[in-house]
Every structure is written in structure tokens, then in C-alpha cells.
Image (cartoon, rainbow, N blue to C red):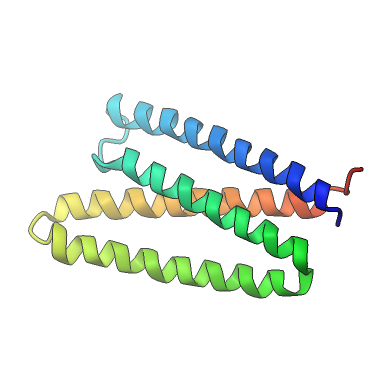
Length: 139
């Protein structure tokens, strides 16, 4: 793949992720404050910022790997996904046992919100990577 193709698409993917995150803010705010889904955790905006930063970092790292060699890409992608899943499970457990151990309703809201964001942002990341890999190099 051409370096210019990767750089142009890297900027595009990061911009699309930014727009996607803004859309997630709007959807979450509507669901939370219109009382459609009041179980959304009160700290949802911090979770969205966290996921935006993490997804941007992961996309950047994966595109750097693709630039070097495609053979390493699959192993690194799977390793990052497994590590992220383990870290997020640890974050949920840490929150549940150390921070909010006495408020089960708050724990459920946190876990559901965190898990839904995990699934949504992971799906978004995969869609972007697949679209990048399928796009023909330009230039």
C-alpha cells in the first residue's frame, strides 16, 4: 500500500471517528434526558471521551502496523482486542467493588453503559478498518 493512501485515510478515519463520537453524544443525551433510557450512567460523557481517545489511538496504531506489514496486522489486532476486553472487564470490576460497592443500581447503570459503548465503538472500529482494507490505494 502506498504511504500517501495510508496517511490520507488515517486523517479521514480519525475525522469520521470524531463525527461518530459527536453523534453518540447526541444519541446518548436524547436517550438519557428524554427519560427514554434513564439507566444510562450519569458519567456517560466521560466514558464517551475515554472511548473516543482509545479508539483514535487504536486506529492510529493499527494503521501504522498496516503501513509496515500486513502479516503482523492480524496478530496485533487480535492482541489489542483481547487486551482491551480484559482491561475493560477489570475497569468494571474495579468500579463495582471499590468505588460503588454499596449501590447496585449505579453499578448496573455503569456496567450497561460501559458495555454498550464498548460494543458500539468496537463495531465502529472494525467497520472503519475493513473499509480501509477494501479501499483501493490512490495516487
